[in-house]
Image (cartoon, rainbow, N blue to C red; front, side, top):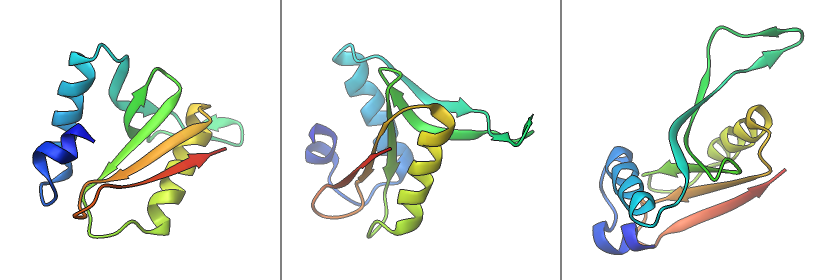
Length: 107
């Protein structure tokens, strides 16, 4: 909420990620930015990885968007991150709208 209150809508995603990282550090919240995950396919690990915007407390996937509206493809993206990470909760947060919009996704 603080990041949206300070910056409002209209910036690129990277700006919101930078601001969130600042807030996490100031609040001593354990996080990893651009957390890398392997993708297991049948009996092999695929050569390409996926990167969640943030993994918070090693339990929550935080995916940031800066778009005019959230779409189902972003929800599916979060579900895939949950599958590869082993996490049970993802927060999809959109800073691109005038009012902060978010979606909670649980596996």
